Each structure stands twice: as C-alpha cells, then as structure tokens.
Image: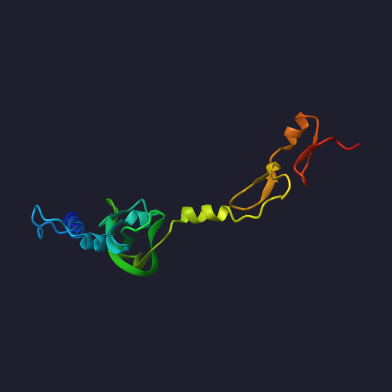
Length: 189
C-alpha cells in the first residue's frame, strides 16, 4: 500500500512540475506562428523579479543524503531574470520563510510526512556582482611603502605587506634580509 501512495505522489509531483515549467514561458498558443512577440512584453517577462523556481530539496538540505524526498524538488519564489548591465546580477533584498510538507523516506525502513523550512525571495534588485565588488576592494589598500614599492608584495584580501624576497633568497647571495626595508643587506658584524 505504501508503494502505491508513493507512486501516486511521484506522479502528481511530475504533473505539477510540468505545469510550472510550461507556465513560465511566453504562451505560444496565444500567438500565431508568424506573429512577433513585442519588445515590451519580452522585456517585462525577462526583468529581475521573484519567480516560481523548482528547487532541489537536497540543495537546501545537503546533510540529509540518506533519505529520499517526495517530491525531490519544490516550487519556491526565487529571484530570476535579466539585468540590463552584465556587471550586475538579480539578487534578493527581502526574503521570507515558508514551511512545506514533504514525504521523507528511507527505503524499506520508514516513510513519514514532515514539515521542512525553505527561504523564498519576495523582492529582488539588480546589484553589482560580488566578484566585481571584491576586485574593487583589493585596490583600496594603502600602499606598503612609498619608497621601493617593488620590494613588497601586498595581499589584496588582507592588505598585509610582506617582503618580495625571502631569507633564502638573501642567504643564497650571502646577505641577510632586513624585514623592515625588505632588502637583502650585508650582514652586520
């Protein structure tokens, strides 16, 4: 009997999945084969906004790999769409938690319905990509030394300065590393 219930649940989830995927596109039935979809309609449908998105339950709960979830994916509102500038991306500015009931099964052991919490996006905007923001920050470090900049290496993430040459580099030339100036100097006697 549990097998029949599981099979029916899986079939219902598949039908639901297909209806969601079909609803996200520009309706072909409303347009004739030769009619052009107008620019404003295309623009409005592609804008950055919360959209129904199929989200894999395992991507939200990766630590639960020993279970099978039915359905294996759920429909959540998530930010999606295009931004007018390639240096920006569609990201959430407001979210809310939702609780969805799914069936969790461990084959031949147990099967139960339980509530799982998920995050939905309620408002989205186009913001500068995090990679570009990090790249800009790396240039905001104060220089290591106004004089002899070529002797220092600066970590762009921490802004810490270190010597370009190591002790070994200096020792190989029978010199000592002066860590304050980052120069190889003659040993003092």
